[in-house]
Length: 169
Ligand SMILES: Cc1cc2nc3c(=O)[nH]c(=O)nc-3n(C[C@H](O)[C@H](O)[C@H](O)COP(=O)(O)O)c2cc1C
Image 1 (cartoon, rainbow, N blue to C red):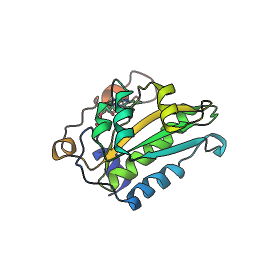
Image 2 (cartoon, helix red, strand yellow; image 1 turned 180 degrees about the vertical axis):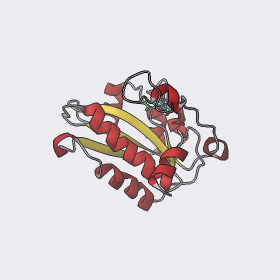
Image 3 (cartoon, rainbow, N blue to C red; image 1 turned 60 degrees about the horizontal axis):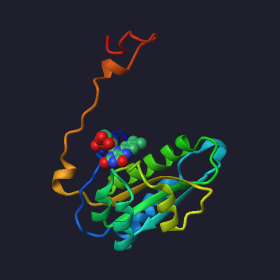
């Protein structure tokens, strides 16, 4: 798949088949994250792979918007270590992981809301680090893989020369 096709096809996946994701595929997802760019190449990130079912269930109980983590075969937590602009670096890391996963037929969904202190304690992440997300990964159910993807029309968000003059004419 071309990079554009992967970007176009990717969906947030919130329901997973029970099949495990092979180590080689998880390794590729982690390596895709590692290749992400970061401010001054500081690489201020850590990725924690969680497969233990009880830990996955506990993680699910620590978010108001990610209960589906409990049903995934694995999750990856992302923590940032002293990044100056953590949101940018984390965003690049996460998108690399998401797209590499999709390319392997594996779906995920970024979960943004957590009781960060409790998640950090559960996973042994140092207090000084910032927890950005815990993302469940797994093979999408048929329904999750065929959702319609909704976006604003390009004419509403892309401008030519000046704001308000549509790119699409
Ligand atoms: C920063 C960020 C935080 C998100 N947090 C959540 C979340 O807590 N729970 C959830 O179900 N989806 C979450 N999502 C997924 C978005 O809701 C989803 O990407 C969006 O609805 C578009 O759907 P699509 O990814 O299938 O195109 C988050 C996405 C981003 C980028």
